[in-house]
Image (cartoon, rainbow, N blue to C red; front, top):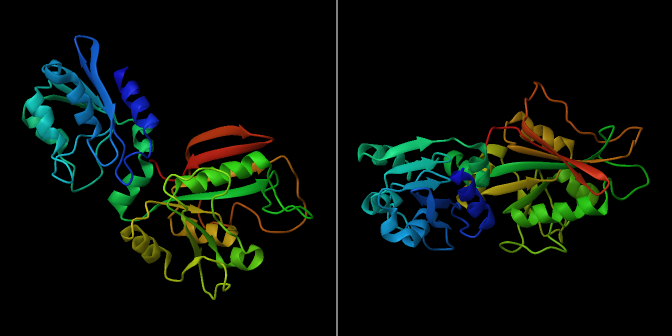
Length: 313
């Protein structure tokens, strides 16, 4: 399926167009790929890259694209205009555009006589999951991460770490992929965390480092204190350009975000340890159940990483 190739192109260019979404596109005529590409950094959208490569061979062709072509004039002209000018006969889209300012490409193409199809691929939606929440809900995409033992404890008596070195490196990779990292004030007082990226390359420099709750912060913590309501603080962060937020706090912070229905994705690093005794635990006590989606299980060294979505991407 040629949409799969468009998804591959977008995945290979992941983050290149940040803060814009990355889109992959493939032009096919008479069963042959005649053009392909992905969104450029500060430049052409994926559809335009593919159409430029196809040239006149785009006339009468099928365009496979991971997201609905834009219908508005932003930093570049509408992709829909170029698709119509190129004479493309059919457009297959992996997902709709959630941006209310740019949506409408499907309707414009259909009104002009282009055959359109929306596959509504979860894989396509996940490729730009943070941007999609940020642009449609005006808040960051929130990931909650925790390291736990098999009996759900978040600490192991007498041990500094719950999980192994491979999992800890993976957490630094996660920090490098997001715009901000946060804990609650309980974690600040107990651990004085740095929350910075160490040992891996960062995509856009160090993430912002936040603490939710009532201060004061330690004088040398380097964290930003966010003391308002969670909803208003997330809205403020979104206005400041924060598209993705990684939470690393304990059960109190987890409960607050889950009860406010503000967690989009859950990552649990599970260590082959039984901690026993008492102590902070995950999951927190919730007033109602949560059905998770798209569960994935991955070994990370001696640990296991469980990934699932709280909200469908």
